[in-house]
Image (tube, rainbow, N blue to C red):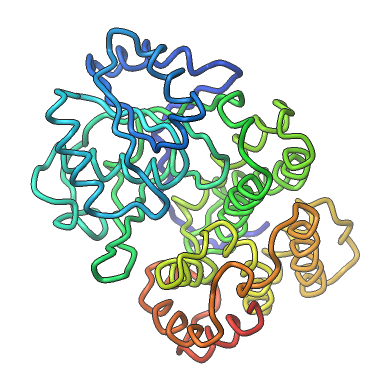
Length: 387
């Protein structure tokens, strides 16, 4: 890999990572280290029903302040504001989110409102905060979003049917506890979708316009890990080695893209999710190879690196051909793990593609795509290929 002589960048990764089987037991001590005494668990009813929230509650012991379990897929502004009010009523000075990306993002939003007051919608945008927010510990129960180490939260504004972005270094979680025993019950399709979310973060972090050497290293190793271990997670959900390595892959991808940014895949997946509720990870996995081909001539060397990281022997191939083989390998990976292959399979209607293409142009992720997107017709063509 070569970089321009005038390369300059910032790299930020403040989250403390704790990894290991049953490491969830250490949460009480970590809350103490943060200088907090009353931790509210933020989760959803499915996590509560599975007994995972109870494990965290026991680990918190005397520090446990209560549980807010109203989170749902594509969490919304109303729930965040409601949750923050509940946390303040319980006297909480710390949040422990237990769940996937939507739960973690809900807690990020709650952390803002608890500290700053008002409503979450008052803080939409990038870098609008001026101080650290309510301390936040994350226990992921999926291995994909990377939200446990990122500076972004995506919260749905259901009143206006759009997804709001809250991007700020002050909402990066303080601690992420990666415990493979907390994700063994994840069903195969959800495992596949969240895993491809992580894989997409890594590939887009590798090709995004703010890429740099440190994020490249994170992204490439994340690709290696996901290629090897995600199929094992699908084959045997109780494979703790595979589950743990996929957790690490998700974190590394999260660190990569939160510094390098993402691109067109995420702009399109965000838009499809906002309009048609298509699951984010599934949409990413379906769209990724199509967007790679769309971008190919702008960054063939980047996709040649993807091919190598996926274990393909492309040493004697031109970058363009190696990059094309990488896109094909991504397709094969999605088939191997049982991912849906078309957007029509995840609830996106054909007559809604034009609206999604228009919405994609206003998504912040599109700015960092390696190939400049000039109009909605270009995006629509990619949607049609993936539909």
